[in-house]
Amino acid sequence: MTPIRTSSTGKLQENQAVYIATPANGTYGSKVYQGSGNAVVVAFERAFSPHTTFTMQGPVAMSLSDILADAKLKRCAYAVQPKITHWEDRNTEWSGIRDKMSLFVRVFRVADSREIFSAEIQGKSSYFTFGGDHPEDLLAEPVDEFVQSLY
Image (spheres, rainbow, N blue to C red):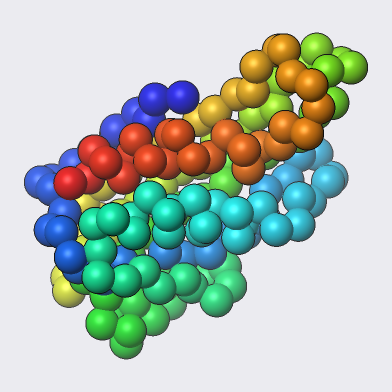
């Protein structure tokens, strides 16, 4: 579940407002997991909250230029653009196939629209579950680790 940093240029400053874009909902095959995009935003809001003055959630999935414009309008110092690249909810206890989730995350400095971090974040459930596990349950730990690495 460790995030893989693919690029970076310095650290983020504490107590700066962070805009978190809402990603499109995750899919697996033809199944769309409603609410998964919002679950990703909530995980990032929780992870950033100890470091920021406030977080702002983007209303819907938007283009990068719209994300940066909205973040600037809302006076945020940083914009986070998560993208769900894999979202697989399985009945692990019956099938032996684990739940999986994967995100690609980009962090931008809003003032100059420069990308300052990007990473792939992944999680898999245990083979030994008693039901009730879902991909959103796999978000907290790797998202927290990634956000901690930014500061």
